[in-house]
Length: 306
Ligand SMILES: [Fe+2]
Image (tube, rainbow, N blue to C red):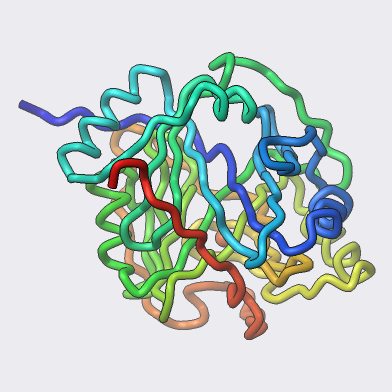
């Protein structure tokens, strides 16, 4: 019997823990260019950068970092496909309550803890599934939450989990240090990146912009705001994306990127392994600030009944 593949629509949201909610709201709204949506559960600040109930939630917490990431399934039928994959791989999951779903604009959602990074990962459908919420780009012409990246000592195991359990597809790797994966059959080169790290850390949050001017103007806007630019401008050989990495007020790393390779669902090119050298990360050779991706605690969680 052939196994059915879980089908995803896209990366939908990331909830970030921040140490000063109003300071971070100002930054993500007025410097990054996300749109304020309203308040979510437990005082969370909901923001969007595309046609979704929300794409980023900011939550007051002692330690800045990652609270959870949400992947939108292609259709409600995919819950069953995913659940059987999770059961087959002994991965516990819980179903979110109706109350929590409705407060967050979701119709249904399930939650796991990715066993290697320890990150909470959710899978969901919007309420209504094909609803349109609009987004008015102001500062930067952001089109979507692009990707999330985690670093972990269990690099190989985490890549295997996303590939074998969640049915993500490998697009490229940098030998032994990074693997970029797409939430199949979403065409974009990567929705998640897994890096090798000495400890588990949430590495960065990416926002995709629609004009190269969004990268250039961000340099000056970030400089005026005193926000450290920690890598770039540059261009990633793996994905072809022009990039700019910078720090939020807690030191969490964010990225704007412009342009990205897209894959077809059928007959995609084979994944490549790029050699491990600085030119594999940036055609333009920009230096990396040591503060990049240093802050980003991954909040732990216990799935009910485990
Ligand atoms: Fe990135």
